[in-house]
Length: 289
Image 1: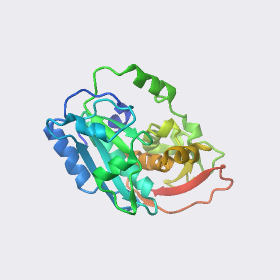
Image 2: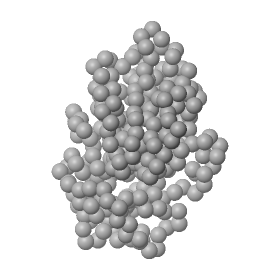
Image 3: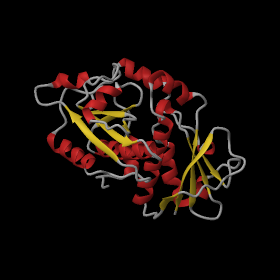
Image 4: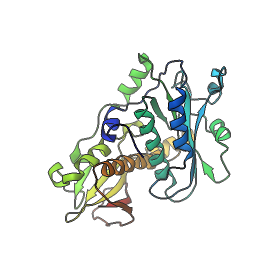
């Protein structure tokens, strides 16, 4: 993956865009985006996935309205959608790959917005030709950002505290969950961790927790579930486990930043079995630097 500017700048500058202008994506930028999603980008767990950029044909701007996004999005030029096989760490891989695509779109000057529960799954499933053992966990609107945000969009951001993030001491730890990790102790990995902290998440719940090994550059990523969040939403809206998708987004930010900083490493399954582990916490994967 190659960007035209530092990935840390892209991550810091990217915001959710729900209001777009009426113009289609410029052909050159659309071609770059379409080429990347069709190249089969991979996530850290190797789950198979198919990603597509869905845009309206010339003169058929109303075609996208039939896909349905419950009124949250206005005038998108298209949607990014992906189908993944229902197996293993499928949702983490989905979040990882889709966030990589979003960062590319942001680098191209396009606006995007994650849609986890506010889209009609059956219509997107038909558009992407979802197989029997596949699912669409989320979709992403894409287009040219409008000059001004709608009042309802500002209200939604304010209601979700979209611009706020949890402090370091509640996210990153050393040796166990009882000792916060300082930026000094993180050393060269302070910046990848900061990019994790700034990652977007469903309803801004920020479910990632990372524990550094005291004697090595090994970082253990855990999912700290928000009590009742996914259970109630999945029941009401038949939604995917979005907090697992959020973990994939965090892993993407960490890995891309580490790569950019020249910090070699790999994702490995190495559960440290930290005791005591907080309630509703689940081990996901470790980064071995």
